[in-house]
Structure formats: structure tokens, C-alpha cells
Image (cartoon, rainbow, N blue to C red; front, side, top):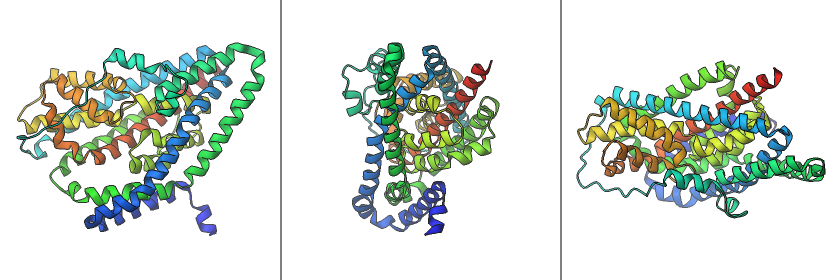
Length: 404
């Protein structure tokens, strides 16, 4: 028992991850059993995570803003965060396109006849702006709309600061609530290894053969690009702007990285990400603002996926993308990462927008839709690592600004 207690959460999740892959491969012929009797326990765990995410985001951002006692500081953090997210997303799409072109010759050419894919309608940019602002106090929490919850938390946090000396009891009450939900989160996160096993095993059982199938090279290309982006862009930025050794950063992020890979949910990984970044030394007030925003609008992994899939779909239709078309993809994917914020299945919606922007048939999405979950596991991992990297960098920059 003592050995189990000493084992870190990262190691427990890693063992669960390996066991899930082995069990999933062994259950290849019994995928229905895995989906019917193992997946529900993973869903229960994910539901518990989703239950705790909204109050944690609401109260941690509010308490972070209250503790800053300065509205200008919140604006400074917000600006740095959005600029960093847009820049890394642009880098990511460039890496995705470069990787796609590099391995294009090895991509399989799949017949594109009889392909159909119904793209869900993309929300216009102005509608996205309108949808950021809640029209009801409870609906953002009920619908788990992260951007609206962030806006609520900012407004309430500012109001409490502006009330002044009379707010002491309210501040104390909100800090107590924040502590209660954080403790509840700790209890739920102890179940992470079980959740990881039950979420990943059915996916491997269902897709084991598909990974080795015709799309293996496209998946491999995407994963190489994910790895390069994380290793190059995040290592350089966390070292130069965050003042942290990249090895320390990735080691500290391991529990969140493995959980994101298993669950393919950025929002679901949020509590664990908060935990990891705080242990790495990010300020709680910064992390509690940067991470929920990143889980909604920062999509580096998704941008890489857009680039690789655009090149692959174009190759299947016998089309060679020109340089201006690739520039259009970079611009569209960067803006679409914010434009599709909070939309379920945002990856597919973004891919439809990217293909349309360069005149590629949207039906081509059907080529990759079958193994989208496998793409999603990698892109979610990159997305949440980028969020964490940003919280370390912004914390460091804010400390330097304050020290002046």
C-alpha cells in the first residue's frame, strides 16, 4: 500500500494509459463490449470533471481578479495572452502545411467519388462576438460556455473591486467557495487513472485496425508535426519568455498531457492543467485566467491538423496548393481558431472553413472523419500544452513588469 501512495499521479496515469492501449488492442474483436461496458465509466469520470470545471473557472478567475485589485493588470494579462495565442496558432499552421508538403508523396490517394460530408454552418465573426456576452446569469454555467463564464467572472470581479472597503465579507466568501471547489477537484482527480483507462480502451478497441489502415501515413505526419511544434515552439518560448527549463516544463505537465491524450477534451483537462501549472510556479491569478481562455480559443494542435488534412485532401483530388492558397489557409485557420470558440466539434467546423477558403471540396472531410478521434487526441494534447506554456510566460512577464 505504501508504494501505491508514493506513486505520483503522472506515473499512475501513465500505467493506466499503457494498460488501456494493451487492453484495447486485445479487445479489437470485442469493440462493442468495450463501448458498452467500459466507456460508460470513462463518461462518468468526464461528467464529474465537467461538473467541477464551471464553478472552478468562475470562482478562480473572480478570486484572481479580486486579488490583483487592479483592472489595468487584468487588461495587461489579457492582451499578452491573446497575442501569444494568435502567434503560436500561426506558427502551428505553418508547421502543419510544411509537414503535409514534406510527406505528401507518401500519402495514399483515396478515391473521392461518392464522398459526402454535411458541414455544419460556421458562425459568423460578429455572431461569435455577440455570443461571448451572456444574456442570462445561469445559462453560461448550465451550457458550460467557457467564454461567457469568463466574461461573467471578469464583470463580477471588477464590480467587487470597485465596491471598495465594503466588499470584505464577499471576498472572504468567494475565496472560501474557491477553496471548496478546488478541494472537490482534488478528490475527482484522484480517479484520473481509472478515467483514463475507461476512456482510452474503447477508442483503441474501435480504431486499432484503422490506425494501421490506409490513413496511417496522414496520422503519422500530423503526430510528427504535433511533436515538432511542442518541442520547438513551446521549448523556445517557455525558455526565452518564461525563464523555465523546457525539460522541467514538460516533466511537470506530464499528468495533464496524458489525460488530454486519453480524453481528447481541452475543457475536461482544465482542472489538471491548473494543478500542473501552479506546481510549475505559474501565478494562480494568471493561470486561472489564461487557461480557461486558452481551452476555448487556443487551437495550435487543431491548426496543425488543418494544414496536414488540407494538403492530404487536395492530393486526393489531384490538386496542388499554390503559395497564395497556403497563405490563405494560414490566415483563415488563425482567425477561425477564435471564430469557432466554444463550438462543439470545432476542429471539423474549422476544417470546413479552411477548405472553403481555398476552393477545396468540403466533402473531402469524409476522408478523415472516420479517424478524427485519433487526430483529436494529439491535437488536444498540443492545445492544452500551449495553454500551460502561455500561463508560465505571462506569469513571468507580469512578475518582471511589477518588479520594475
